[in-house]
Image 1 (cartoon, rainbow, N blue to C red):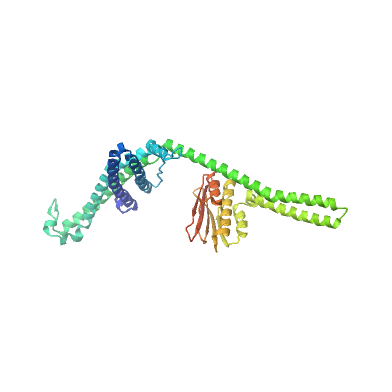
Image 2: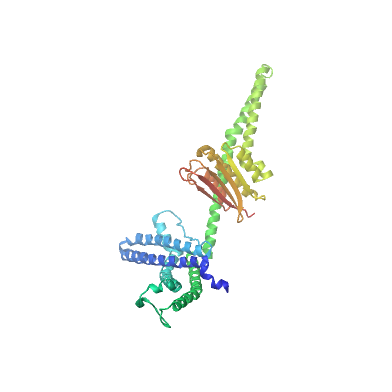
Length: 417
C-alpha cells in the first residue's frame, strides 16, 4: 500500500513523465516532417525529383526513430537496437532499392504516424492531469491572492475559505498516486509498442547475428593471414638470413681450418655470434606469437613483464582473480602490447596506465596515456589489426584519442569459454 501511495515521489514516475512528454515533442516534429516531406515528394514524384526527397525523408525518419529508440531503452532499461539492411552492392540505385524494400523503413513510418496520434494524446493527457494535481496541491499557497472572479467553484460553492482550499490540496494529494499509475501504464505501453515496431524481429535478430558472425570470422581469417605473413617476413629477414650467414661462415672456416687456423677461429666466433643473434630473434618471434610466461603464469605476470620493458612509466592494475580462456588472454595481451608500442613510438607521453578487470562476464582492458592523442582506429595502423583480433572473439575495441590527448584504448572481450 505504501508503495502505491508513494508512487509520485519515485524517480521512475518522473522518468515515465519525461518519456511521455518527449514523445509529444517527437510527435509534433514527426507530423510536420511527414506532412512536408510526403507532400513535396509525392507531388514531385512524376518529375523524379520526388525520389531523392522521399529518400531523404526516410533517413530523417530513421533519425527521429533513433530518438524514440533511445526513449524506449531509457524507460525499459534495455537497448532497443535499430537493424537496417545494407545494400548488397555499391551505388545510389542499390541504396534507394534497399531503402524501399527494407521492412524497417516501413515500420519506422508506421511508428511515426502512430506516435503522432498516441504520443501527442498521451503527452497532452499527462500534462493536463499533472497540471490539475499541481494546481490543487499548491492552491492554498496563493488562493487568497486571487479575486473572486478567478476562484473556482467547488461542489460546496465558491472556494473562499482556508478549509475549502486545504480540502482541494488534500484532493490533489489523493489524486497524485492515481495520476502516477496512469502515467506509468501509458508510458510502459507506448515503450513496449515502440520496441516491437522499432526493434528488430526475431528473424532479423538472427540474420543480424549471422552477419556479425560472418564478419568476425572474416576478420579472424584476415588477422590470421596477416599474422602468418608477419611471421614469414620476420623469419625470412631475420633468423633465416642469419642462419644462412652462419652456414657460410662455418663453410669458410672449414676450408681455412688447416691452412689458416687463426682466420678459421675468427669465422667460427662470428658464426657463433650470428647463431646467438638468430636464437634471440627466434625467441622474440615466439614471444610475439604466444609468450611463454602468458601460458605458464597468466595474464598478470605477462603484462608485468611487458610493462617492465616499456620506456614510458606505466602503472599496472590487474583485477582478475582467475585464469581466463587462453584466447581471451592472448587477445588482451596483444591489445596492451600494441597500445604500449604505439605509446612509445608516437604518443610522446610522460605516463601510461593499464587497467584490466572482469565486468558482467567480459574482460575489460584499458590502456590510457597522457600523450599527444590523434590515434585513429581506421587509419590502417596496428590498431585496426587489434580490432579484427578482438572482433573474432565477439569483442569490441574502442579508441578515444582527441588531438592533444589523452588516448584511451578500451577492449571488451567476452570470457565465455
